[in-house]
Length: 338
Ligand code: TRP
Image 1: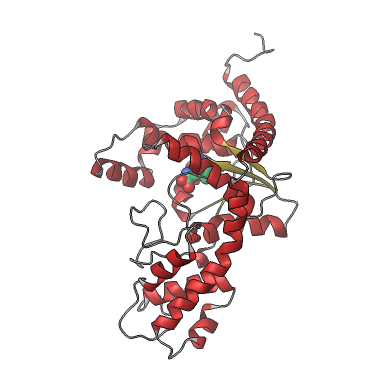
Image 2: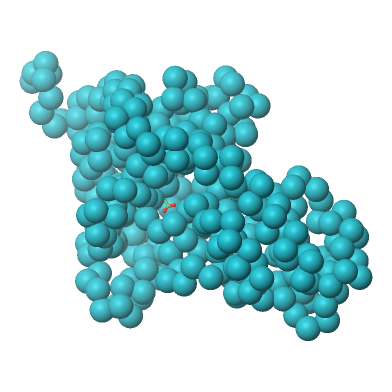
């Protein structure tokens, strides 16, 4: 059983990303050691919109440190950086050539991002449009059984399945069609300022999210200012009390207690104490993780070695797939004569 996923080294990873994806994957691997994982830092996807080079470089290392701190085992799990393996853009190009334009045009994430780029008066790059072909390559190079991703990536994984099937139909069985699994929505954590939308790592304002690297004081302040409602009564009711319910969900994730248990414990206590106790719980939950992340970041050469190992193992597999693809399509590759 093989799983594969990737995260973009952009924005600031927040507690919702961590609980909603990274942590779930590492728990799954710890529970089932027979699962083999491919975990990527997808820096080539990050540059589909403008990036500051120095920031990007830093974010790549940060994400590697976060993977390791979350408990992935670099001896067994293949942790690597997408741009280190040219097989990804190579296969991405091939997929460009077999994917109908109309399939890409339907992607809703592209439409959203295009609109954002236009609002900020940035260019809408061809890469932004074409991003799912590269994502399909990331996946199909390694024949994973399953691709765990957030719900916003469902359409891209479906497109990947369609591309795999199309290639297989034209050229014969080449790619495994992967299963799709969304991360558990129980940990769907909302924005502290606008609890009607998800906590977002790309939101310009940091006030709505708890970043993985936030200081204890920063966490206290953000929770203090979190939007609630005026009845000063702690209860779990996502419809009528979205702010308070979201705080309960965060509290629950940080402590392992259920939202019901916590709601009962704070029944009649008002929001002040409630918020300050949540902040303490979040700090207690994040500090050991932050310590590990910082330890990894203090030795970038060790991170380089881990990436190189992961990349070598990834490339062993991907190069076999590329040889097969070239062979099926009639592209030049060494040792194959007419
Ligand atoms: N597009 C994904 C996102 O923005 C990241 C990604 C790139 C990915 N390649 C992937 C996820 C391959 C899973 C598998 O979240």
